[in-house]
Structures are given as structure tokens and as C-alpha cells.
Length: 271
View (cartoon, rainbow, N blue to C red):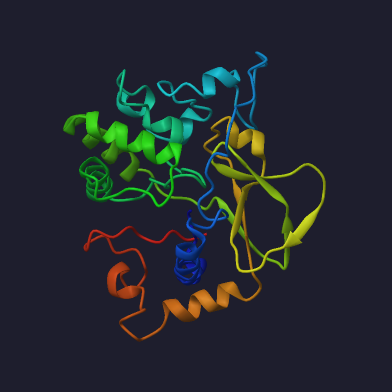
């Protein structure tokens, strides 16, 4: 999951508590780490040309699912994509811009890459390769990343890392404090609202869904998301982030403005 700065510390507290419960429940919380349901099958492609706002491009569902061709809906939003980002290298190295989208905003099922340091991106990919970085539950996105990391060349990885590091991060998550959230289902490794207007109590969860599911499915790099959170979460996050106790102070590793890259930590993105 991706979190803006005011939510990050609170999210860590939630995930720590959920992790303790997960040891009893024999699995991580479904709201935090959605996995494909049993007998999962994707919607078949009917051949319709898909569109997104403010773009003249058009792609079929099969095309936006092609792991070796990143849909570039807004080419003027970013520098020219390196070959490894745009098309990957068959058969093992998938195009980075498919899962993380053309300029790197990522999605609920993977990391935002834009604005991270090239060194950090390279380090994390190396840890996928060596097995230091895995996942707490079987997930297609993690499996694909591990497979890719074992085959990517240093040159390709360096090109991709430099490209994403050169792009200025932008806000793409609206944070909403609420007691009730839309009922959701897992769709392609992310949560999507069920048809209708039925809602349920949020409890102690963070529910992140696309503002427009079909735009996100189309891999639109401008797709935005809504993060529903329990009332009071933002202030709790601010309090935790400002805590002077070094055991819980976020600034120890992430820097005073939570953007430190010196220690090999990712910056905490603002909303």
C-alpha cells in the first residue's frame, strides 16, 4: 500500500497490530494485502477500444494487459521511456511501465517509483533477487517482480531507476476520514467497490480504491485513488510522526521532512 505523509505512521501502527492478529489468523489482513481469490479469472476482452480522459490514445483490454508493452496514455507527462520501461526484454523482463505505469505512480498493489532515488530502486530490486525482500502472502505482483529481478541486467536496471528518479512525484491519493466505506471486492490485486451503494463500518482499516476503476485497469498514469481511513487517523499519524521517542520517531530513518534518502530509506510521499 502507498500512504501520504499524515497517514504513514498511523498505518504502520495499524499494520503492526494487524500483523500480531494475523499470526493467530494464519494470514495477513485482506484489506492491506489483497490477493487473487481462488479460481480467479480475468474479464474476457470484447475488443472494445478503451479511452481515458485527456488522451487521444486507445487500447484494447488485451493490449493494456500485455506485460511487454506499457500503455502510454500521456506521453507529454514524462521524458522518453527507456526500452526496459516501455517494452521490457522478453522472455523474463517485463516492461516496468505496465505494472508501475508509464511515469511510475504505481498502484495499490505495488510501489510508487517516481521521485525515489535511483540507488533505492536498485537496492530494492537487488533484494528481490537475493530473497531478502519477499511478501507475507502469495501475490502475483511480487512473484512477477522476483522473476524479473533475477533476469534484468545492470544496464537495464540502471536505465529504469534513473528514469523514475527523474520524474517529480505528484499527489494522486485523496484521503477521506469516515466511519462508513463502500463494500469492496478484490479485483486484479486491488480493492474495487461492489456495484450499488451499500456501505459497511470501516473499523480499524485503511481502504484504498481507484476513483475510476476502469481508468486504473487501463493503466492510466493519471488515475487517482481514494484512501478511506478511520476518523482521527490523520491527527494520530501527525502525533506519531512528531514523537520525540527515538523508538517510534519516523524522522530517525526518514529525515526531519520524511524525505531522507541517505540511509537507504524511501521518502514518505505527501498527499
